Image (cartoon, rainbow, N blue to C red; front, top):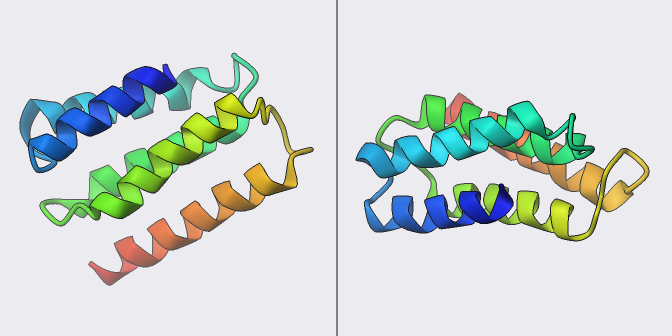
Length: 108
């Protein structure tokens, strides 16, 4: 699923975060958000959920770098097998992305 998310990011970037490519990116993030806890990666689910929130609120002002950071975080959490709150780096990463996303949405 994280590889699908990365591929969807590349396509969405190429399309300028518009159209079907943006929808596909959102759908991939939403799928991870829904499945991550069941698969043992609740932190990846949290980051994917924040990405969904960002895409929901950004309109035509999608912050490409922040979106990339979310996708990279999901991939890193999975690659490092950071399955739970016992990984302080993954916890801090998820929290920081949530904070920055909230700040961005608040600035719109």
